[in-house]
Picture (cartoon, rainbow, N blue to C red):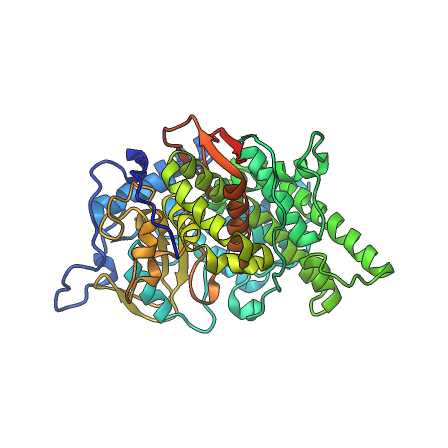
Length: 519
């Protein structure tokens, strides 16, 4: 039975919910008798060219989450950009810009004929203005999107990533393919995190990032990657640096129209391709090592996801490689940062931390015997993860290209419209979450009743949910469970941490945490 945390928790800073925040209701206001046309949806103010210039000058869009959140505060729970395509007015145009750059700069030998006719016309569609787009932030709209989901839900392509794979001749994994292209299968995720550290010490963001990468390497490749210790592996450090460059360059390219990026951002395209080269080379080396070991002996125990997929022989080596790269690149920071922010919130809310510790100690024997029980024996800890992702959603938005007409907030949304659900604002709506600036895991145990399932959708919904969700949730639960059993987590930093958008939402600075061993 969950233990209730009754402490007065620290207040997350005003910037989390912005000044003059207003409740946008859990349900739309009473609808007029006639559904309003799409063109009547409020438009986001501002000049797209000035916004584009700002992104180019600042080499990114760090405050995207705050700007869009402010727009919801001003316009209400639904709006549309003045020029559709993506947040900021751009998106999906990177493939042709990358192709142009590869051809003209000569640093990679891309073949124009490798672009399929459909892909080329899709990029042209973006260049000419893009599809209709609308932004929403209420759970009821997420529910309606799932209700009209087709058998093959579709979202927009992440063109910088797809462009790299096309030009290098790599397959796309499940993350980059839509359901119609990838089918409904998912890789088997088994195993767990075993053991726990037993000494006191300090840790910050980079150190936790190393530990998460170690754990992810053990799950995928069956061995640690050499990041934790006095002499971290240089190859693994280069891999982590490549991840940072890849994410940063993704933001710079995804908001830039192809007609400009080929002139203004050739260096960014080069950095993006070189970062992916490093990521793929790193994964290649790990997979080849496993392949060689399996060729000489057939291990009888579980050695990692890649080894299991190779032994089952249900996927080609290229498909295994493609999915391993996406799971590795897309899961390190998306796991490390929620863990870091959870530990930070527990450190500055010691009463909440103590309630979670009591829960972990009570369930320790059961989880030690059956690690998979962590998902059922630790309800308050699961609620703490939900609370962290409510305040600090790693992915800012979910999206669907709707296959049929529907009505959102009493506006007609035509088929083919790109609908983006903004999780940052959903989690800060006072009508949904009273006193949203408070870190209060207990609120998730109090949420009951129909229609509440869509208050928590950080991993997506329907058939396009994150395929690594089960692995990520179990990994975070077990790691926090072991930490809480063995350590008191403290911090001298009580002030809020500013979050920045760099394709994912991440802390701008890392808090220094102290881990004191419990006797």
